[in-house]
Length: 171
Image 1: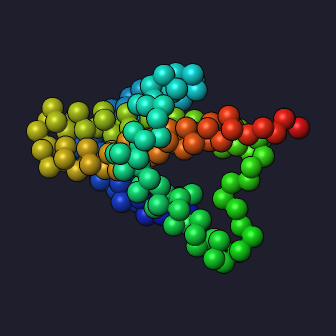
Image 2: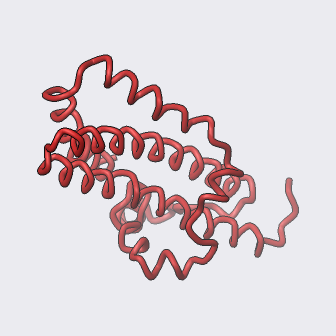
């Protein structure tokens, strides 16, 4: 949770500060409402919006590096393994893998919703010539939403490949 808390505070602070200083409560509600419509997007649609079906694409753009510092990433798993030698980040049961795939859709929807909140606020900043805020909000959106969504797509590809290779029948 510590990496998640760190990135959330780092990236949500500029959004909060800008909204507090420059947006009316009514506009904040509208932006939130419009952004929340993304929670109705299905997994089928997210699969169609996925940038690539190839792990190599995500490796080339550095998603594996981002995975090292993610909430359930390599760094956290290595620390847990050191403290609890029997710890396994993923168990090979098909039901567990399917649950993890479902979680990637949930996390992707959350970050897509947040992406649109950031995007709408950034557009507002752009239209009102808050140039520094445009840069800060766009960077925060990239770090907090774009990279995590790409990470979810990458993890989903890995999990689906694992399921396809698995020869165990469903229990």
